[in-house]
Image 1 (cartoon, helix red, strand yellow):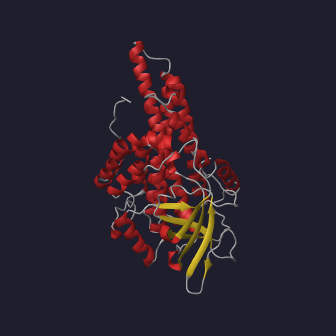
Image 2 (image 1 turned 120 degrees about the vertical axis):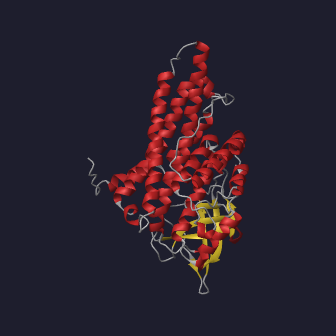
Image 3 (image 1 turned 45 degrees about the vertical axis):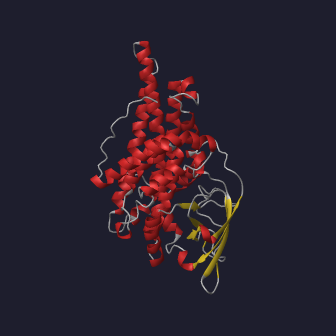
Length: 402
């Protein structure tokens, strides 16, 4: 597509962070973008993009400097997800999901084992997949059926049927949610970091999806044997509230923002080129204004939450008090709901602007892939489940702004 390349707006990052974001933008433009059609068409893992990110040491960007990483905050990583999402949504989502797992280990892996692992993750650029979904729990991340079976010598075993395990084949390690032991209630959960070499993985199906095809997310039965030191010491309730939910909602939203941004870019190019041919302002220009306004609203919300989370983490308590509050939980859920609905809305607006040319796969203005990828957003932790949870929380929540 011949749309002009716009200079990115100022981000407020320091020079080193901005340089890393610029590197991610270059990888998105030169590697992820050219491969995106094939990744989507063939439903294959975006291997070349992940290898380029590894070469730039971006998989360990969030790891603290004392372990060899860059210590990147979520605002910086969100901009990277945006850049990748503009070129290849699957690449952006793999990168986002991996960073969520890294953040869980950085914040909650307080033992020597996890410190050593983080240093290794920097050195070898290990890719971590998440196994949070589970057969039989109805999509609830906060419920686990499978328990840890721990022997007297400290060796542990778990067998879990994960209904969706994104990029499981290509990951180096797995971060698995489990029931703490056979006597625990379903909500008493733990996280286990298992190396692929410690796991037997039985494929439960295929991944021939409408969108996000390159995430390669079929189900697996995972049979893992590991040492007790590989259990993350913090309760999963804290991991989920303080890290997993905010990181997932912010970085997923950033990836969706990238999809929406490129859809509007293509719509703008179509309107501009149509205007040149007609010699006047085309009738689709008002629709472009509406789509651009919606995109701006989405961008402000997503980037503000990334900034706010980094600000909370800089406090002496790491933001634990606020992140544990009902107000913060509701607002983070609102972010996910808003972003997942707006990305599909913006892509639909772009389609109405571009018409049949945007509907075609072989057009420079095509938004077909954008639309298909966008509709996955409402399903990643289903919006109906989040609305139900928020509805219950609102019974005890007082919004002082009203």
